[in-house]
Amino acid sequence: MSYEVAWSRSAAREVRALPVEEALRVAEAVGKLASEPRPAGCRKLKGHADIWRLRVGSYRIIYSITDTIKLVRVERVRHRKDAYR
Image 1 (tube, one colour):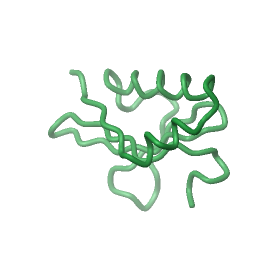
Image 2 (image 1 turned 180 degrees about the horizontal axis):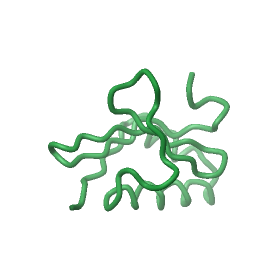
Image 3 (image 1 turned 30 degrees about the vertical axis):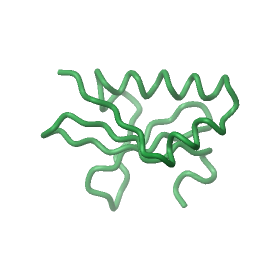
Image 4 (image 1 turned 180 degrees about the vertical axis):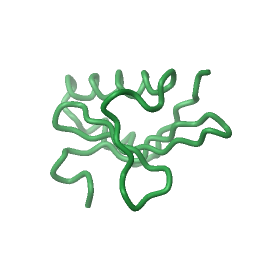
């Protein structure tokens, strides 16, 4: 039951702007979403139908899950102070 992981253009740009060590941690966490799209510690965002967040250190990965076509789409990767604006 593997999901495909897709990055929005803005999320890919945000990851490239991160320090290398943080970018590697984020990429590793996103890679794991392919096998488990709802890992321990992820939360569904209130007020949104299918938007989830995952904490990776001080950064938040905001993503959506479409179970019918088995797709995880990374929407944003931001520092926690800017993630929900």
